[in-house]
Amino acid sequence: MKAAVYKGEQRLEVEEVPTPTAGPGQVLIKVRYCAICGTDVHAFMYDVAPPGTVMGHEYCGTVTEVGDGVDRWKVGDRVVGGGGSPPPGMLTGTRAHPRFNYRTMGFPENGRLRAYAEYVLLEDWEPVPIPDGVSDEEAALCEPCAVTVHAVRLSDIKLGDSVLVMGAGPIGLLCLQTARAAGATSVYVSEPAPARAEAARRLGADAVFDPLTEDLEERVVELTGGLGPKIVFECAAVPSPSTLDQALNIVARDGQVVLVAIAWEPTPLLTPDWMAKEVKVQASFGTLPEDWRIALDLIRSGKVSVEHMLSDANFLPLDDIQGAFESLMKPSTQLQMVVRL
Image (cartoon, rainbow, N blue to C red; front, side):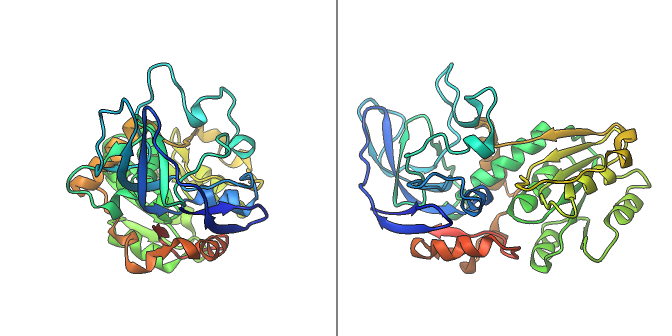
């Protein structure tokens, strides 16, 4: 089968690798779509993925083979590649280590093939079924939607709260919608790229600001009656000027800043500006199994729309993945890029 293998030093090569087969308790998935995640781009950009890695974790596909002892799946079942509940007592991924460090331990499963490949082998508990009413294209974005569900569920958001989402990339646009679904009455968005800002407007943002040309703090504080938003979701991770410091300045007294994006470079903070407000900071990383099921239901019910990320221009063949990663290393106006396999 074809797979995009990371060779190190910002180089991906599409090559033939052995097609796995399903052993006892396993299922083989034919990948149909795999979205390109920002964390994969970071692994490429900062060369933290070990050579030989096949990345890709935002994907959907079809069961093509079931191993002995598997009775929950049959050939032809549509699934998303993750989000299943592990057996009792079994921790997985980032939650398996009590002091997990994403920068140094971000690829603990060295050698495991992920979904920038034609087939993926999973334990039978790992996939989640795609419900009727959710297309394969939509299901490919279940994982990033689940990331924002996780962030919103970790937040202190309450019915009627005002919210600011910083950054209108794929995660920010999904966070806008999941925050609204959780009860936010007013959702404001900060985004300098015109195409992304327009997408936020189409998805119902109450106001969208360009932080490069407008005084974001002044505008948002004014719209919230001089208080500032109760919750800020930091989905930009720009180190300079620091969007985290900006979020802490903008948020209301006793409010909360939720870190969703990952800053890979030092991010300066000037603490006297906002410490007296006694704000809270909540880190959010990854997902829990329930987040995937909630995400699929939000997409199925129409409370979250991913159509803005699914035009023909957003899809590319596996052979073009090197160029896609190189383009995503720079400031981008892309809403989402999805590999079609």
